[in-house]
Length: 354
Ligand code: SF4
Image (tube, rainbow, N blue to C red; front, side, top):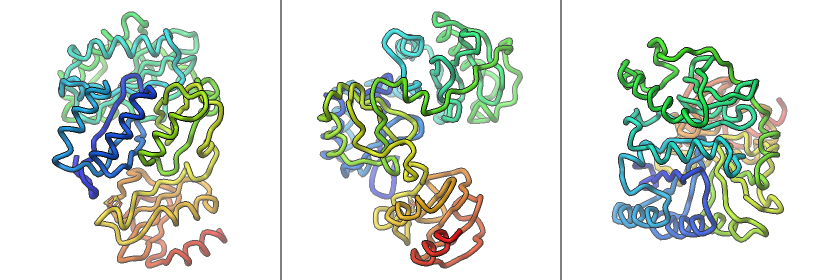
């Protein structure tokens, strides 16, 4: 898709994991065909930014050669999975994901935003990550398939989960789900006997403690190609796992050279702002970093009223307008402001006191 700084190319590595060679190759491709910046998305995918029109096709060929993009565009479009990032070799999450990847030809073409969470660890870890169909664990240890918007799911197993998921996807389309766009908005009665509750979600700290390496938090979920390549050279690192939480797991790594999960900077949403985006009249990220420790709860800085970095409300939202900021509380970017026309110094003084 086209963004202010050029084409944005989304990459969804199989199993949400980059080998060292894939990470190094992706960094090189982002430098060569893009502007060198790479985003981590809230669905555990990557976005290569600033890709030129002539660079698009060579970039895709490089990604296909790295086994990071499916050569068949239809299968690539269906590859909208997120795995709980603490999966281990041979567990249900990995086995179901591999079976689903092998069955993508049988999965119907779903609306672009539909996502599938394979969350078959000891208890759900992706409950707050956007998805429409979820494979989860119940309190008694069995597996269930749950449609978003429904508290209960249908009993399934590692062997039948993919078949059950394909059947649910076909039902979604056959009952007009494409018009709803997302499962949570689709009100047709479910075709499955839904009687199994997922176990209570695992706290994120607990999930990350089970991961095969330290969590490496990345401010604003964006890093440059050189930083990505450097991570592959950290002591012990054998692969990088993507997470939906603005960070990577350094598989086999001995230490975290980035932000810890508790760092307030990881709570802040801020779009690139000026000068990166032509629609922005304000710089956002330096101010966001200064404000992060001053604000409890969610903080959103937006270069304009479009609010690309956070569609949902934040406790404090600052929206750029004619070179200054409008401040609103419990609101989205562009909402009617509580105070308008603030400079960065005025905001620091105001929020430093509250
Ligand atoms: S919110 Fe506005 S300024 Fe920020 S990236 Fe989106 S369009 Fe650009």
